[in-house]
Length: 532
Image (cartoon, rainbow, N blue to C red; front, side):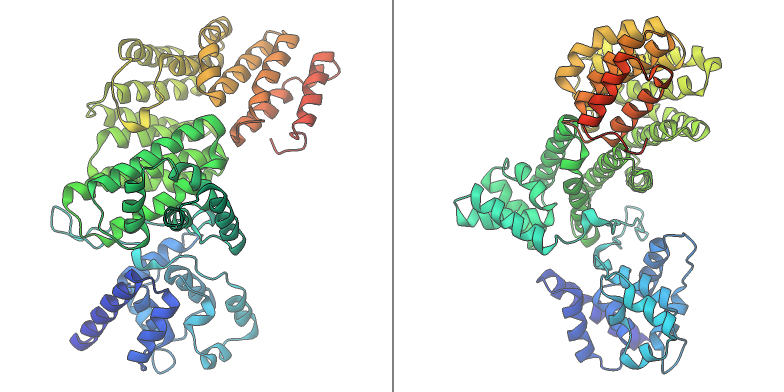
């Protein structure tokens, strides 16, 4: 590209960013740029409207390919943009992915004449493609890092339903909900704008907890392109803490859209740059924590692919910070999900990686948590790992007994001796130490019932599995019933799956009165027929 071409591209990107900051959509920006540069093809216009260089657009295209096989080069993108005067015609599927990156409909990327040049089957692909859901303009930060090199960490905003714009019906519902909650028109308008950006109606209970000054500051940053300051970051951290509490009490369905939307907003803020390095690092830490929490919630809803994507994003952010505590925790979370899915070798890899990183952590709570995850994975690895699992559990228990009031990392808000003992129940059960599992559970269940319904239910189901092994069927059925009741107030899909899996173990006694009672309750809760 000539120097004049580079100058034109920079001018277009600056103009697109300025228009975007004033609320113009990608389509509106594209119309303006097309008038300024009538020689540009629509494909080039929309890349400029999205604020992307050809290299960045090619990188995002390759990331967006669901099959992971895309290999678009910058030079090839230029060829596509030059068509039909020069270059070559882009395949229909390429147009679909580029539209996803640029945040527009596929049909907008080509003229009527170019569209007519495609065979009917490819025209159908173009017509059927789902419109793009978010502009690529803010997906990649090109800020300079401390070492002076381009920061290529992608702040991806996942293009799934949780981060797409609210539907008209959802917008109307949000308006009606606010009309009944807020009499003050100004505050109602602020909350309306914030809720649209942060997950819709589900965000209202959280946003209404914020003091008016924090609401106004956050609204300026999120909806009016205001500058990020330390108080804004603190407000976002406060919202995350509230989301964690709601997740414990009610499950992921009430908050997952809010967390994913916050994650997208923080990604936007990081992509814009222009903030002091210390504040940027703090915001990256927030992004890592949001990615971890979102990953956990997607995992709890059995969306393993979505969870893996978010855990990986969090891990990249933690590595940029060289934060050994966060890196260790994310490796432990990946190990936990792999163990749950029966992928024990992968779980061991990540559990040991967490062990390596946690040696550099200054948080005793993280060291205890990492030992806890290792104990679980080793217990699932088989009885030949019994000794190693029990030693890891002993380390975690020692930390829990010694440190009861440390203000640790925010992601370890849950750490209590009772929660640690719940993991001990799991390990003892997996290792065939039935009496130890039941004895430990009796000490921890009363507290878990009050503080964390999900963990209480899982502990009851683990005890039920032990009792089935001991052929104590009536007691096992009672434990299943106790765990099952939590599903009526908590949206954990893992919990439902665990209920059904534990019930399967009772099949040899399906005709007994106690098992029939379990089945009747399953039907009453609408759990019969759900996938296990």
